[in-house]
Amino acid sequence: MLHPILDAVREAGQIILSAHDVQVSSKEGIGNFVTTYDVKVQSFLREKLLSIVPDAHFVGEEDKVHDDALHGLAFIVDPIDCTANFVRGMKHSAVSVALARDGVLILGAVYNPYRDEMFYAELGKGAFLNGTPIHVSDRTLSEGVFCIGTSPYHRSLRERTMTIAGRLMERMQDLRRFGSAALDLTDIACGRVELGFECILQPWDFAGGAIILTEAGGRITQLDGSPITLDRPCSILSGNPLAHRAFLEESLAK
Ligand code: IPD
Ligand code: CA
Ligand code: CA
Ligand code: CA
Image (cartoon, rainbow, N blue to C red; front, side, top):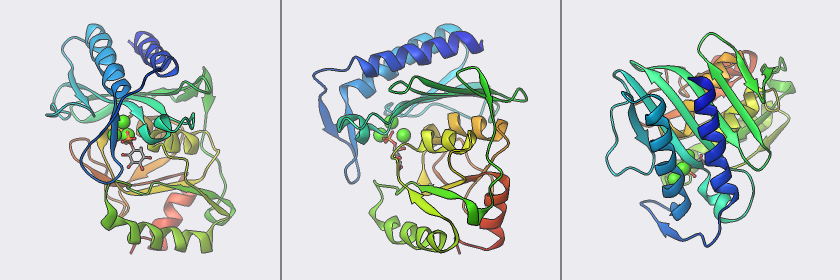
């Protein structure tokens, strides 16, 4: 099952690379866009993934009504994570696919087509980047770099985001804001970054990256340390075990 899914995700990435005449329209919230390619890539993935696992549910960001992610098998799909980077030609967006069984993540694939980087993991089998095993770094909080998501479509969360980021700037070496929540998780998984957080994310933003991160030895919870949810939005705190534990012990989100 893994390899056909990775092939589909890689092919979806080729659709992103081939994009031309991209039409952009607005969704609910501030600066929230959807393009003809978000829709095109999602339709492609729906067809391919359901041909591999026909009895699975399919939860895709661009659907009007979202399918059941908690019962039986369910794909959780973000066709283009960071549409804003895609629209602006930033070359830092990803295809994110997760497969859950009865609400437990069993497989994840996050692909950055611009760098041809395929991150993937299966439950209990470790995490990989282009076939090579990956692991989180062993840097402590004070030795680490952190990345943030700014919950861009929720203006009311900006102050809280900046408060937490300000505390982390006092405790850590530096801050990054790359734009793709999925790639933030895989950057932590392969040891490029030590910690990340976002005050609200949707399951399709983090599901694929979550299992890659945990299989790479990392931790992912909500900001208060409680478990993430696959059927509704939640906050995200992700990191290597040292940085993640220190964040919670020092109550940096209180
Ligand atoms: C967004 C990106 C961004 C994060 C937002 C997400 P989208 O996803 O992951 O990094 O800050 O909260 O919604 O809408 O571009 O797929
Ligand atoms: Ca979106
Ligand atoms: Ca997303
Ligand atoms: Ca998206």
